[in-house]
Length: 290
Image (tube, rainbow, N blue to C red):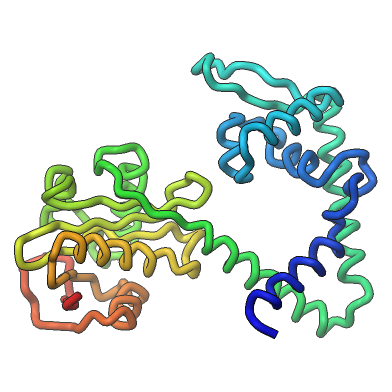
């Protein structure tokens, strides 16, 4: 059986086992799509555009699902108090009660899948589910070059600085580090890349461009998304940018406590070399001809 056949067989088994084929998901007189949308709106409510992005739905289908839930008296749609052009969805009291009921039914459905299995089979299934979920999430990572002064870039850089300050023996002061200013990371001087999942920034990286080499800077991935290969994807994207700009050599430096970063660079073909700058916080220097 080839790869495609395995995926299709897996999809058929899962959709049947979890009730995706049922017109009345969990016996609640609505489809899985409408039930999932109710869950995503949640107690806190959400902007419609965020819901559409999070679920990957086109605007027409999203509108139909929202109208269905609204007709049932489960949600309210209204303009955002901050921007009248933006619609928000929130649960009514009936919607909150229905969400609680769906949570109970979902727990029961999950227990029904596990119940006939032995303890060993359960462990194998749950471990496999965790792996599948993470690998599918990894496939949602998208990369984009953004202005370094943009909101997502700022959020990533602030998180990056905070983590370095927490992990480095004597803290971290960006003013004492080799510069990577907005101007240095704006084309054609450089590029700032943000990685996202469902429009949420989960990592970043940057490159400073010189005629004979480039310098990798600001490599960071959110702790909750580590293990998905995001750092390697960011690095590969920066290498692609370097090739497109005819930069033959990439350099970077890193701190001794960032052992996971060192391992990634080595496995990505970067060779450790003697120090090529006076970065205060660096203990290891790497380069790679691309």
